[in-house]
Image 1 (tube, rainbow, N blue to C red):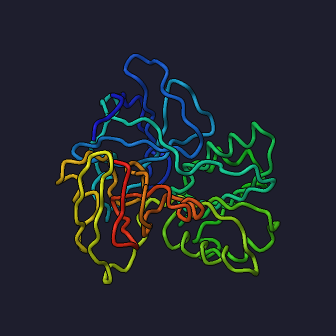
Image 2: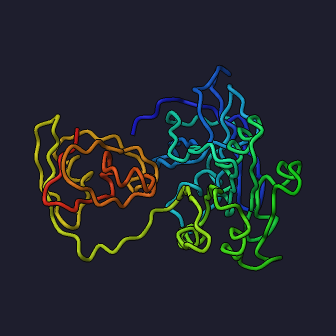
Length: 314
């Protein structure tokens, strides 16, 4: 994947157990492209490309900030950041993309962050503060030492509830949501166990709430019943058969169809493609419930087809 920018690691610092923060600037110190709260960027880490949320309570036009949790069982990106990437290094970066924006003008917004999932929420909080809107944050983690940005969040007083597991146990998400107003919009980012539980909790009529999620890891789907289907790329005039055990993206690339992609897991949104005909089987972690229902676009890196034939505007 081509990188749009060549940036400079102006600062690298440890901000919590196993979390480092990178401050990225242009080599000449110039202004960086604008972005909105919830946005993420791709970073070129050796031979890898990984996505990280832009973060910070005080955005500056000449720098971007990302924070990276070391994932011992990960695919190598966080290890590269922690062990190889040094201050002063050059690093390729994409332009910002945002699939986790503040989508609503709701009067009541509740953020629920799990660990490193706090990162996209800091710019959102900053925006809401500037707009004098109501918000609260429940920040969960293993322990206080593993939770980044606690000092910066302390200034917000009781609007921020810090709940480390070693002090409070595993959070009762239903109990935390139940006291909120029915029109509350819940934004959450964190480990899959938390997000899956929130989906169940917020779908329960007893405490139904609008839920907006960002996932760092892909959702798991049962692929045992997958079958082959046909895909026509309308602009290219090419039609291919996608076998049960391969993705649209893989088959498209072999056929010479150029689809911009990055994570290949359905979490970054880079490969989002317009759908002209057919009904996708959405398996991404990016599109909202409403966007999925519209079937206007799909992520060919992971999603499949519910009809025998699919036509994409590619």
